[in-house]
Image (cartoon, rainbow, N blue to C red):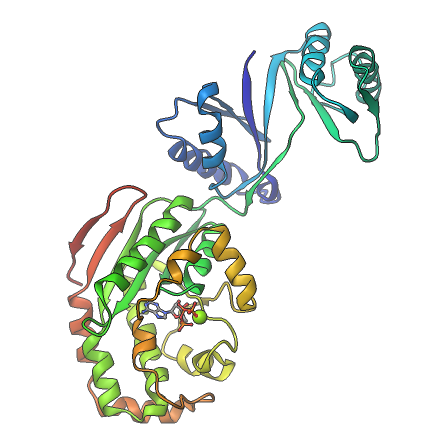
Length: 394
Ligand code: ATP
Ligand code: MG
């Protein structure tokens, strides 16, 4: 007996004008994700059908669980639309079941001669006769058997799985994710991907103050994100000179604020170069001194690009829950120092003033330093399997 995975799009269906485009992108993403698993995928306006090899079912389902844009999916028996075949199939599907059940019939083929509720009732009594351990409960059944009747084929299933929801990655242009080794930024990246935004990533490192292990940690976090999207270009920015100069020249209270303004400036430059329309980061309101609203607003002044902060309003525990769900938490808590944590001053300013920042920034020629920094950028293409590295000159 043939089984297929039925995929329902959910939120996509509200995107009237763009619907075909969204479905097209979802189709491509699913195709990429299931590559090598010997599946055949087809689609109509309301769903996708995946024919698979039985031995690959678990792999197919676990990969579909990493694709944004899928609302629900079911593993359904596919048979020809024929009442006797339907009866035979539902009896076989329900023969091991006990407890309560209900039958739901959905007829998209209105030429089918029996009306939906009546058909459900008839199939219910077939099941009651075939299996004495079953009884009907239409309100809170243990098992819901769904019969979807289309013109040529009928699909039958009992279990409904929830996909990740969201929009297919690539239905929005790119964003530049500021990716550190912490807990928050990978979660921010995941949430941006969920809205369909494709990502590139930027990581600021300050060797020798930060280690190669710290960089590897970021690479592994980035690799986790690639489960939900295609490969990601990770731009590694050598930040040592800028950071050391800030700590040598500037008022210690303002060092973090200035450092973050430099990060934003560089991220904006990279975003423009790589055609990213927004900056995405893991800032969360009030989490640390540099993330008070005053700090954010003063730091944000250096760019006119939209800055998306998906975890801005989440509590740390909520962010941690998500980090565990996407399997980045255990990597994030590895102990390697990040460039943000190595020079933390005793009393960072909580409510920085823009004029003070501007004054501090006259103490060194940051434009030239930024220029040098970005020209020494290294880009690593992160894939689920093997990475490749290239240096690129801006
Ligand atoms: P934690 O989870 O420990 O808070 P974090 O990565 O969120 O770690 P923060 O100091 O809170 O670190 O930084 C706020 C945001 O700034 C990060 O979420 C990240 O988007 C960005 N950021 C910080 N440090 C770096 C870095 N070294 N490279 C790239 N982005 C960074
Ligand atoms: Mg944080």
